[in-house]
Length: 287
DNA sequence: AAAGCACCCTGTACGC
DNA sequence: TGCGTACAGGGTGCTT
Image 1 (cartoon, protein in one colour):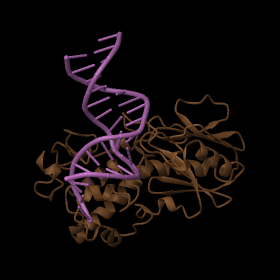
Image 2 (cartoon, helix red, strand yellow):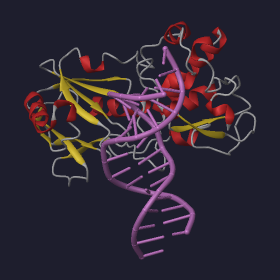
Image 3 (tube, helix red, strand yellow):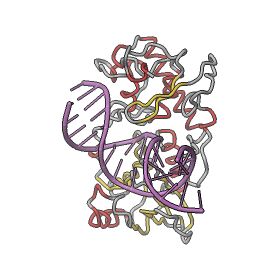
């Protein structure tokens, strides 16, 4: 599932491949993908506002990609669970579940492919009000432990749900939340607003190091997911995961088998020995 | 405020 | 072999 490092890898691909070029044609056949704009009318809106426009910048906020056009309009893309952006030569046969195609000058097409259609594409104005509810970007917007502390201050919820909440901090998903908490030696059930200053320092450093490592390895491509970069390449960070999808395997620090529990409808992985301090009786403490 | 769940959706894995 | 089911979980929205 694409999280910040995967989206950033795609963004860098756009920088290398398509920024500065003009969009010559747009097709939007996946009506669910453009649902925010309103079905067939939305597809027309995307075509009208993107066709003939030059791509000035490719930006990222959390897990959202923002393609800034020369009109000031912004094409916003979220990959959801199974979305892929691929750059291919015009004329390449369309993969199944290809929902939106931006045909750039020079013969390269940017194709949005998304089997499960949790992802979306829409066009909006320069201020992107649709993303105003997001917290600061987990990499660019949280400069130090004190900033992280301010985001978590006063919150009585557990730290893992807080990290996953895009309104608190944007870009962290299930993989990088688990990996960051392991690196910081924090139990996923620790109370978010009651972390000590050393714990906040460890967590801030862990989030940054984990996200940067994910980017350095071009993201995580787990066996049961589809993540690939702009050119179809697989990421490699899954080979460096310490806890995620490693239930029963020994913790690299202490040898204790990694545990797994269902939390908020998804899996949480942690080392029960290295990651202490869970709230007694909280979800993962019971299993 | 926070937890927990249903929902959207399809590909894959697995048990019978 | 093949069918049904569980699972994967990002985001949203609802209820408790």
